[in-house]
Length: 262
Length: 321
Image 1 (cartoon, rainbow over the protein chains, first blue to last red):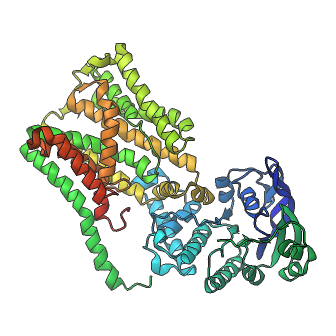
Image 2 (cartoon, helix red, strand yellow):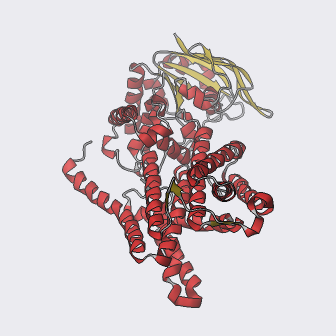
Image 3 (cartoon, one colour):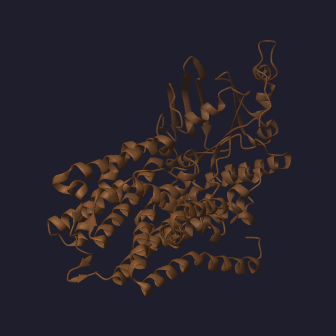
């Protein structure tokens, strides 16, 4: 079954075509990775899928429903939730409260529930508390529940962002360079967590530079360069693809060399 | 939780007690005013009315981290509607007050819908304009507001035959209103609604990505804030018995901002503490005569240096909870 489908998706910024006629499918099971050199249009692609940008052409559908150009909050409410390349935590809130915010879509209590606190709101609040603590345990953050999010070391901030996104109950989660800035050990832990998320039934689409992570974690890889899809297949197939090797290592044509990222 | 409960719980209890200090301070000040009465009671009454206004301002500026220089407009709407309906049309105060609040919230919705698309400085400028326009209307619409002359003979607050006329009665009434407002703010803080506001304050993009409709929550915080402002405006005219455009002028914006920052923006106790301190400080420096304003200014600077997140933040474990 197809969870996400892109059909000829294109995005232009003035004369620059950042994403050029890209089509692929993300099945309901497993982990799909989008790789490509810096500036290949990967983050733009994510912004288009999650509704933060509207495509200039093409169609995006999620679980058979057209979501092209819908507002991002609506897309998230539909079950497609993203994280960001640069961690965007609610720094003044505690680690636990960050995950509770993530549970927003799971509840429906409004202003009057806040003020009058009826039984239904108290039950909802208990469920939010329980689910948030569960997710913190899952991400290995239980010991930090009451710390301010800004006090966490970088690697754990990344884990918190992941736990917070999972709290929204997505059926497809988009991870924008989740391993950026992580050390080898943290990256391996992240890989295990991503596999578990996929096994629990949430399909994962990730952008990544860390090739070890991609090769160990992804079931399928889509390769983009200069905004176009140049290859697609299993990690092994993609690694052997001449077009991919050319894009990554260069063919003597002007540089498309990968710059270090941070 | 892997931390041992025997370590965390006494710690929490202590911070819970420390957290009570701002409230004990406020209760002490109000109690003193009750006993002494007269001028002290008047000063504290005004401080409590400001506390209602600043609690509302805090929902928008502290909880949701937006900026508005124009909340005085909603206090003016609440105050003038109360004044005109009771003094000129013989309405009882309670329905006049409720209508004033409803009108302010309605105007806030009409104004907020386009204005809240603005961000940062632009939002600040837009809201400043709302305050200035409302001020001009209260000055120029003489047939209703009597311009600079103002409206006098506004009856004190009361329900049916029970009127609150004494200083002490007013202090009790205002204390109850302030307590209810602080209670509401505390409940909002620890709710799904309050968390959504914190999310908007923390990162609009991250909030959106988690399915929070940012524009909707900003507008709701703005409406709430306008409701509190109108309530404060209405309380003011019934306590003083008189209203003129100056009451809700730019001075109010400056004073209430000072209260919010001195007390502690984003905290629950901050607005009340700030309103009391900023109202009482000038009085305590009366002995300095010519240097009164100088001493007041110096203390404000010292406060903002040593408690940059406000006085109430000194008593809460995370500075913001």
